[in-house]
Image (cartoon, rainbow over the protein chains, first blue to last red):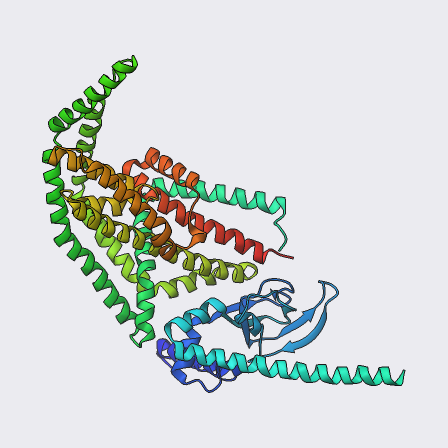
Length: 173
Length: 347
């Protein structure tokens, strides 16, 4: 207790561990080893946003995904002032992962609901990871592909249900 | 994709003018320090892919940086200690042959021939010798001036070596720290632009150096085949001057013709030399450049000519040599910045 440096180091260790815990719970990084998670952590960008500040806006070209480390992020659609909230993301949740694969326009706004810290994982860093550590890079890309495939499957299922509902309505008309 | 609005274009233009003025001021105030950093940045750009490759096969970045660093500067030193004396000796031999007196004789011979032709045409006499003599004397005294800065050069090289190592080892960390200072609103845009500039710039620098190396090698081989004396010196000059598009083959040809005429006392090798360098230029244009330099970063001939003239005007012969690569670098940065702004403009 008399040695402040010791306390500071312990604090840092705890902070680092909690960050690795956050990453461990993100599906794209699940099952990665501790050293692999540390490699991922080195390429992430930690950004702070004040309450009400936009992380990105609908229509802007996306470059990568964000993980909420601390705080809350609302995903909204529509013009400023007439926005509709479609999801509220909290610690450990992530968004914008499609932009990791392709620089497409963002399909929604992301706005900090409270003072928030996010971890950004971007395409240039993923490409760099694939260059320098292909094994780890490929496993991240495979997980990303799996998530997107699951989402596509879910959308196809929803689409099928909607089509069936339309057919039913047309039959009853 | 919609075009940028006129106001945004004017703002970008003003921003770049401002950057140019600041850059010019910094170059005047701390030119040598900035140039140390820029040279180190260029070398680290060239070596970074090799360090990445080593990292890919499991070599830690620090060790990879040390290995590449030792290999690169070892190779440069080896070239300096083995090839430079040979080139230097050849240059001295050529200098003896093309002493101002011998040159005066050669020029006077050309002058007499031309004047004879002019007399036939009824034109005035042509006085070339005194002018060219002055030019060559000035160039020689310039070389002596450069040699006097040896101590400064040693310190400069040491600083470049030092900065290169740290840029190689910690480049990513430095970049991450710099990016973290960018405001949230422009963060993704900055990251994307930096990434694209890095990629294009690395490809451009590696491309022009590889192109110059291949042209140098082919020129040396062609001159050896034709039987031009001091063929290594000619090849070296052709390669070096090929850093400036369009200048490598003509410089090589001119040097080869002067050397062959002065050494052998005959013009008979002139046609083969010119033909060889025309062939080299075509090979460079249609075979080497498409493989080494990406089409998107190649420059318009007018820009090249303007860059050479401006470089020569401000910084002399060295300015002419490095103006085009410098404009190429600026061109890559400007176009990536412009496209970046277009992609990320606020909607």
